[in-house]
Length: 352
Ligand SMILES: [Zn+2]
Image (cartoon, rainbow, N blue to C red; front, side, top):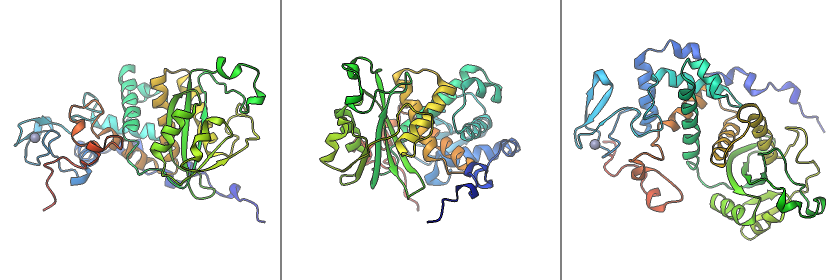
């Protein structure tokens, strides 16, 4: 049998393909090019032609000096960032675009203080921008169909850095309940072709590795009949009702050296731990949700070139924010069938 030729294969991030957009390149863009890029990412359906975030009308006056539009139908004034995650940002559009490239290139994330120095902005500004990006990544994560095929799932306690022994018989009496930290991160990953790693990743912060939450999140996101691979923890037992269940007996210790597992779920946690230790240190439960999802996004886009990632991130920030007053109008949430049926605003005109 031929041996794996990993050593001959160049790492993707070192290849020319991984670099499609650079900061010197963007620095040379004029204001009009930057503005056009934002318009195209904000309104992809119309190729960058703006339409009103309130009523959907395409009839407007352009207020050139302010780079804003006034709707001819409802009279509302809007900009390229109105109602989006970038709505209240005072940063120049070019600075935001440069920030996206920096964040796309930082495969393990960056700290807000690094971003602050790169962009020459206040700490709060850098922190807020990064936080909004994380929120936008979380808010847009259901933009794909339900998972199917081979799905790997596992839970880990990352705050503090400890996981109880996997098998009940390995744990000291009473250890199971008393010494467990509060929040467990549940990861659900869709496996891709053999040897190519996972193609899609969802994460949830749950109370301990418990059967009820695990069943809820897996059933909510995975097509019935798919194969679920998990360890022998009893919390995954309910999954055999609607899925083909494969139990893996892990020979490797969960608390072993970083990144040494071949298992997809484990490799997610390895990356999370590296980022967590390097950039974040500690986090509240709400933030843990955002960080875990950021790692999931970075894992899922690991073979994209940096330009694609930067534009994808910016595009997600230019969708309507969760707290936007226009949100209910045309967001597509799988959890809300009433909203899910509205793919576009009611008065959005069809192409003539
Ligand atoms: Zn309008």
